[in-house]
Amino acid sequence: MALLDQHGQPLPPRPQKPDMGASVIGSRPALADPIATLGLDPAQLGMLMRSAAEGNSRDWQVFCEMIEERDLHYLGVLGTRKRAVSQLPMVVEDAGPSRAQRKQGDFVRQWLDKGILQRSAFDVLDAIAKGFSVHEIFWHTEAGNYWPERLVYRPQRWFEVSYQDGETIWLRDDASQSTPDIEGAVAEATMRPLDPMRALVHRHPSWSGLTLRSGLTRAVAFNSLFKLFSNRDWGLFVQAYGVPTRIGKFDASATENDRQTLWQAVRDITGAGACMIPAQMQLEIIEPKNGAGSNDTHERRIKWLDEQTSKAVLGQTGTTDARQGTHAAASTHRLVQEDIERSDAMMLAHTVNTQLVRLMIDASFGPPADGLYPTITIGRPDEVPVETLIDAAQKLGPQGFKVAAPDLYARLNLEPPAEGDETVGIAVPPQPALPAKVTPPQQQNGQATPSHFPTPTSHDEEPQEAPPTKTTLHSAVGQLVNRYASQSPQIIAALTDNLAREASAGLGAMTEAVRAEMEHATSLEDLKDRLEKLNLPDDQFATAMAQAMQLSELAGEAAMLDEMRRG
Image 1 (cartoon, rainbow, N blue to C red):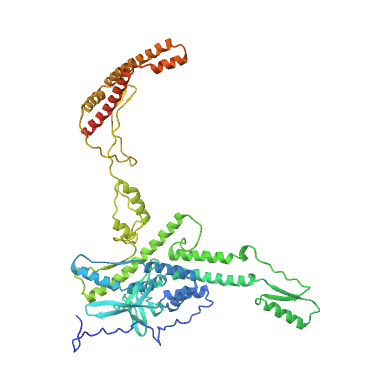
Image 2: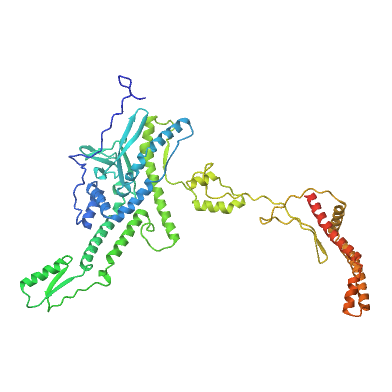
């Protein structure tokens, strides 16, 4: 419930003052303390690392900032790792199904929708390079409605890790002293404990160990320093051998004024890489070909150092350094990067849930009786690739595999078309089950093949529905013949022989009449006249052929009717 003033109006929340901000005079200056960054050698770097391990890390933290500014490859791969996690989806899961738990989940979900955590995630992940990061929390202080309205990044050089336990993080404060919570500890001057309600501390170790010695920059410090040395030597090499050397020659008759004029000329042509010698002298410039003085030695060394940095930050080199390789190797490198991404997201979610979500719920609703809080999950869902899903639908769909259309639209980030929308693509109509075609029985080699229903295919045309017909005497005879013929093929053979005899007798009668006319003919013209006038006895032959055709049709119709009745 909000506090009210004398007029009954809610009191506005009191703005919070910075508690861990910069100080004009003291140990938290806005500008970095000057250190010997120019000309830093391995001995000085080792001294900075030892000093940080002993509880005095201010100069070391300045060096960490400087190395990110100067080593562009380290800045690139480190930024890639932090941006990959800061852009991952963030989802709130309720603590349970009760009404109160759903209300608490909606409260956290509304705060997450404001984008405050998403904007600060990149700076929170600065702990990857330096071992820890600290953000000052500015709360929206309204009764029953507490949530972080600002998360302000504070540089690590304003803090210190206790040298006595290696874990406790202090705020530098000239007017304070603090003692870590371990047996036998002594007070540490100019240090103040952090307020858990005002400080979001994210620890991100790159290996197992104390926070005092964690931070990825400790692993790449010497690598980056040697790279800067190689880069400097490369610049000197290019200056000495990348530009042609100018040589001016003068003879013995040249005066001092002539020599000065010649020297001025050779120096005015592209810098000071020039010399002047008498004409009788010889000057030989040896250009390095191979070995230590080769013109690509520095480039190859810098590339190798960059590869080591990529391995330390991203676990692989396939996504940063262009090399010829197989698709399988590139896929493996991507899997390694995803493993690191999931680990970073898990540690970030743990920090947010334990140091922000719990405080929000406790201050707004009170501590839950069951100790369960809503949680923020960071990361991509474990989903099957879209290509695999579509391939499975295409191959398994004809086998009965079904996929809900809304699921496919969601995976493709598309909306189902509304009525009246112009669409692309066509819907394939389902293939109906086609009725079978009946084939008449066939007679081959004295064996009868009964009528059957062949398997329908998509190429078969859908037959037209035949009108109902009455059962005639011919169809009844055909059914009788087909039924007994399928059981005893000898009946068909007997009928065939009978038809052959009748046809042979009719054909013989016509043959005898033609033979008689040929015997009485006196010439071809006479034979032609006799055949034209001949009336052949073809009634018997025509009757036999008609009976054969009719019997064949009756047998086929009977087979169809019999099969339809049984079906």
